[in-house]
Length: 96
Image (tube, rainbow, N blue to C red):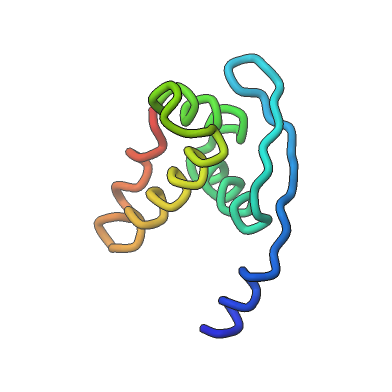
């Protein structure tokens, strides 16, 4: 557990460009968040841009930044998948 904590304390943000709603934008996330988003996209058979577009459309305007909304989405997705039933339900969180 300490090794995992140490790893996360020393991560740096990584900027990547994504297309959200037809517009190119950049997001700065931890490498682990990018890995998680890539895994979700693969599991859901959609592009990273499609996931980000869905997250953007679902969030309340002005409530939080897209970056914060992405982090909350990733956390929610994997928390839902943390149980056996959750593994079956997690796709419903992919904001269809």
